[in-house]
Image 1 (spheres, rainbow, N blue to C red):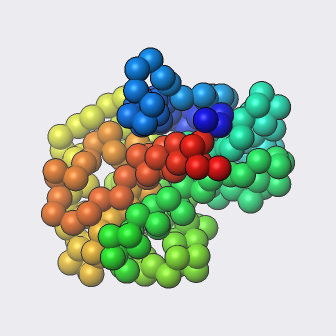
Image 2 (tube, helix red, strand yellow; image 1 turned 90 degrees about the vertical axis):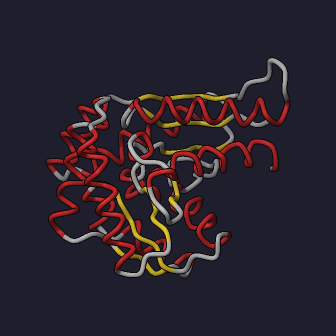
Length: 231
């Protein structure tokens, strides 16, 4: 079993889910007292969020690159950025290390294709929905058609992520709003929806909607375990 490197803390709410899922999947495979070999570098999300607001992606690239380098030096065999938004910097982070970066969008796309989906909706932060880096990877790398919510819905999704989910808050009205947004994406032809923010799965799950939900936290964590055992 290889060692999994996690860049977490963005937010720690979903990083805790990564840790739990990875260890549960390892225990399923090996049983008994087995747990995953993990190196975690957890960053201060307040610092990251401030840099996001300022548009200082170079500073964030340096910060995440340093984290990846520390993980490699600590013995990690792969690195995961435990947030969808910060995959905007995936190439810059990969350039800092010789170990592979397991891209979260690839994990989502592979599940979508396995389920026979060709057109998916995308929920996430404004950066993930609007900046193109994520949808373009789904389209160009995996042949998926991607639909994003309209502007008012994007604003609501982003606000709930930062003001509620990243702060450990779960509100029924926000869940209802998200369900309505998924419904609007389905009305526009989405066959499934990518939960392109690692916190959304804390609010919404498959029991809430009729179409497949691709929870990137679960899929990314599973990809890490597959890597740890299969390479």
